[in-house]
Image (cartoon, rainbow, N blue to C red; front, side):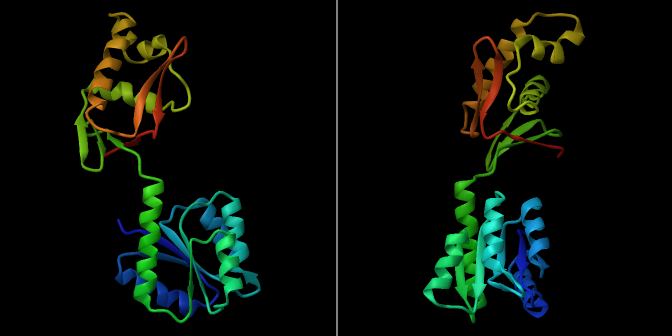
Length: 227
């Protein structure tokens, strides 16, 4: 899947040209010319990054970036502007832009700077591991382990309650009680099985035991995927 970008400029010809050029470099670009709608998209959609022009008609791209950061938007933002003085560049960066490119520019430079920001964002916010419901595997990059059906169900139960420690009885009732056999100690046995497998690699999370509370995940919670 190609990385998605949001291009924000009040000139349709510029956004169209940027979108075509970025498509040739492996990006899917969405364009927007209004600051209010752009802020909505930035706040509610997921993008690999955004390109924001400083001048958005009656609105300010710098104000848009400031509002986006205040709303918790963390994606890389590159600003474009014909204004090259130090004060304008400083204002864009202080508002929260990750980079500021002065027009006119070479398209290759824009792509290169976008990729630098993508790499930085990935390094700061590495993706979590994921669990496949079809293959019953846990995977992160090239690291993968196979889980039994019971191990998978146990880990999935913990994933579905990321902020709530699950008591031994709760886990037993959810996964074993319906069979009408066994006792709650089986939970500890399978927690041990899972921990042993997780110790093979760094999956960026661990199973913690909280005294008198139960078990929970600590770290980056894996994603459950139906694949």
